[in-house]
Amino acid sequence: MAYILIVDDDEDFAAASAAALRKAGHEVKVETRASRALQVLEARPPDLAVLDVMFPENESAGFDLARQMRQHPALKATPILMLTAINMKFPLGFGSADKDEEWLPVTDFVEKPVDFDVLCRKVAALLAT
Image (tube, rainbow, N blue to C red; front, side, top):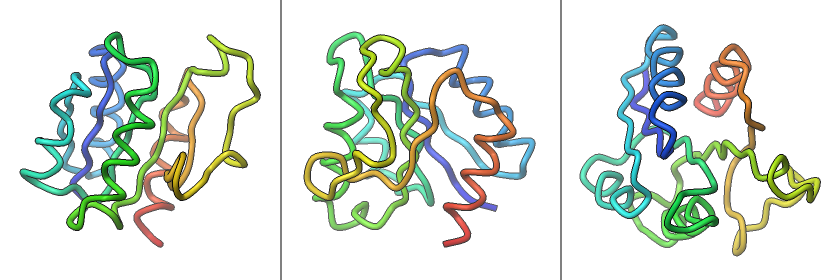
């Protein structure tokens, strides 16, 4: 199947997501530090990246990483699935309509808490395109 990188500071959630995606047949790597994610992405570009938005060191690190990926020649076409609990913390009604090539260049969104069946379906759909 595909190689997927999950970038999320919540180790338990990332491990559970990785287990669900591995069960679906994918190879999965987890990176819990946004500050290291670009290096990991460059070392082995994934077929798909699953990014959290908020990290302890930067509440918009996932957005920043998505923009960095779109500027990187080897990563600019990588599908990005953004996982976010931002609407729980800041009730902004944030979602897919907010995608923007400069500000928020992601392929799709999934709200946390995540139903792992939904996560697997979204990943399958993004990999099929």
